[in-house]
Length: 266
Image (cartoon, rainbow, N blue to C red; front, side, top):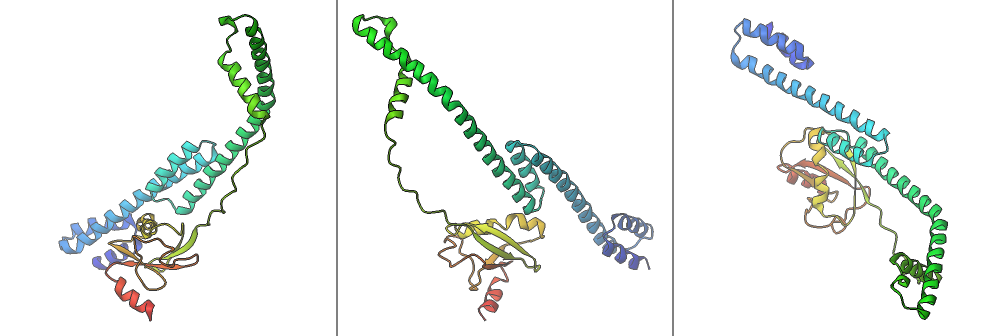
């Protein structure tokens, strides 16, 4: 009966129930091989609970940072949350927030510069007038007092180059190519969307599995199978391997990759 209650406690993932069962089993002098699996399970559950608590704290810090306007604070919180195993969507939302703050800062800087343009132009005209007067007086009387200051020289240059017609602008280059939108199919049946440049090497796509290892408990050496059934080449670009938007790459253990590749080819 005690062994049956132990299996029930194991299936429930209840830390308190498993701890109570271990105490009862030790008091009843059950064999070590019957108790040890429960102890291992108890340790796993406690570690998982600690990881979840740490992840929750770091995600809350990230959300608090996103409410502010500091890009550095958001980046720091993103790093901590990523190491704690935060969901990629939360990290992507934080990245979008940083980009939005960059745009806002650039817009404000442009507006400030636009407001300062009349003031700078007026100052340059005054400095240039003083410089011209000095030059005219220096023709009559050479004196160190009539040497142009650095700011007067700079004002003359700005007025001179501002009066010149604008230089011909080089033609704009082609629009940047959008990233590939791919789907990684995990061994559990779950799928995960990723974005990556077409000219990235295959190794860059394999790196996308790093945050998924902990999230989906992926163990051992992993390999990616392309829709064609061939294994991902780490040293060749995705474009050269025929990968395009909408492709589904299969994530599998390296040991089972040949079998899965044969199945895909069929």
